Structure formats: C-alpha cells, structure tokens
Length: 219
Image 1 (cartoon, rainbow, N blue to C red):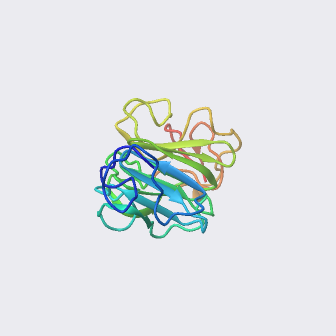
Image 2 (cartoon, rainbow, N blue to C red; image 1 turned 90 degrees about the vertical axis):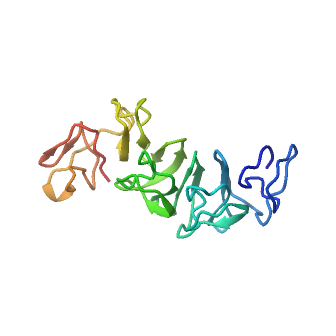
C-alpha cells in the first residue's frame, strides 16, 4: 500500500505517507482487499476480515474508535467471502450469504433500519443469499446469488436505485429492474410489521395482504 496515510492506512507500523509500495505487516495470503476513504480492509486466508487505518467512526469493526496502522481482526465475522471499505463504513459477506456492516450510519448505510453508528458488525436487515457487496461514501449495495441488486443508505440523488429519491433508505431495497419477477408473498405471516416480505421475491411491491409502494424486499 502507498499514498497518504491519515490514520495509518499504510500499515508499516507507523503513520506516515509513502510514495512506494509498502508491505502490509502481518497479512500474508490475503484473498481480497478493499480501500476506503481513510482505511482499508482485507480477507485473510482463514476467511477472517481485518481492517486498518482511520477509525473515528468505528469503520475498523474492532468495537472501539482507535486508529491503527496494522491490520486488526473485525469482531464477529467468520467465513468471509467479500469485503468492501467505504467512506466511513465497511461491509462484509459471511459464509452464509449475510451482509454485515459497521462504522458511520448517518444515512442508514449499515442497513439496520436506523441511523445509529456501530463500532462492531451488525447484520443488514431483510437480505440473505448475497455474494458481493460495495460500500460507497454514504450508501451500500449488494448482489444476490440470483442476480438481484439491493441498496440502502443515502438516496437524495437516487443512489439506492428505487426509482425515487429520499433523504435515506435505512434498509435494503431492490434496485428497479434487477430483481427477478417470480411470485409474491401469499400469506400474512410472510410479512413483517413494516410490510416487508419474507421467503419469496416481491412483485411490484405486493406483500401478502399488505400493499407496499417502495419496492419492498423479500428474503
């Protein structure tokens, strides 16, 4: 890693800039890497996620806000298959296809349904079977095994892809045109209290006995 090193995203054991590639200390056989605004994350060969650099919003996932120039293990994420470092948050997908995010959450980019930040990983609601994740500056998107794309977080410019704009989308919404149109949810017990379907794919926002106009997500 090289370039500027605010917070220590160049992991040479100290916080300093470098114009040349520098070996990441203690990280051998990495399977994936992602560089964010002022931090970086990688998947080790044992499928654990490690992060390093600036940690002012908890984007390193270490249950604290201490910057570190060396890779530290993210708590609670195992069997990682994908990782992404964003503006001031990070996300990973575990071996079960669940999305876990941590760090800044002012626009709901962690996908929990609120705007409370977290220094440790929290599971994004209403999505499963995911295989890729991309953490942007203030929003997040993930790709499901079926080819469907879901996004959440900052949406004033339509980044969530729902076909509408809003200040934020704190839970995953299907990107218009990406979800396979199969069958809706046919019973009330497949719908959550907020009208979000479970078990099957939504059709035009139809959710059992509840009609939703916001591209509700089915799992």
